Length: 278
Ligand SMILES: NC(=O)c1ccc[n+]([C@@H]2O[C@H](COP(=O)([O-])OP(=O)(O)OC[C@H]3O[C@@H](n4cnc5c(N)ncnc54)[C@H](OP(=O)(O)O)[C@@H]3O)[C@@H](O)[C@H]2O)c1
Image (cartoon, rainbow, N blue to C red; front, side, top):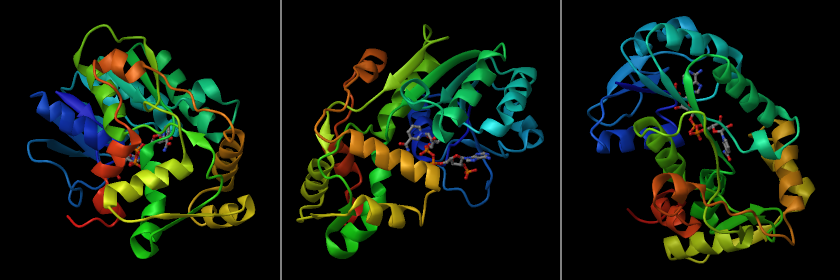
């Protein structure tokens, strides 16, 4: 039995599907076991990673776990998992751990990684860079007006498909040889944000315009949905990526044996989110 936390999310949802495709028995943990939309064939356990006492039955009888990062309780969750019989944990972490000085993102992921390092469990850290799903924040204006409003059209990025993050995690859950490994992940190619917007247009067969915002305009609109420290990290990152190329790492292919999916593929997979007819 493999327990998947974060199972209703972008990455965890793909971990669940890939484990089912591999014929594994999967138990998902969610705070909303009644309302959660989950695939057939999974066991569902209610539980909250922020309240470890709610996770006892979710962990019972499981040997492996995909762990969504919740720093405040990571030590207790790891202790409980070990006490209930879990042996191997694959952790959703972030490349911020290696690429960013102390900030709220790198700090939270380092906290979770340290908890696992000290736990006595077998761990693997999956450290993706920016998710392609971050650009779903453009979906509403693309659907309504065919427009993306964002700063820094010339900033280079190399966003990763959630299915590739999940594929690395699933491989580490199912195969031997990944215990103690930390896998930093990127997508397969550097591209600018303007090129991403063009890729969305191709995926939905509609012209999509990039309307450049000033950093100040972007900051004001991003603050509606994100905390200020995260907004400032993102704006600083994009500013630093103008006139340079984003790193391209071979890790997805090295671990899974298949190349990382392109942003164009991601946009095609999410065409309905951007308004394409189903
Ligand atoms: N976005 C990026 O560019 C990026 C880059 C690197 C790393 N990351 C990291 O990736 C993570 C986000 O992954 P994602 O996009 O797959 O997540 P997501 O789609 O936002 O989904 C969040 C998932 O976590 C579960 N969850 C949250 N709090 C929980 C709790 N207290 N107890 C149990 N489950 C809880 C939710 O489950 P229920 O609601 O069903 O309980 C849901 O399945 C973040 O930690 C982020 O720091 C993101």
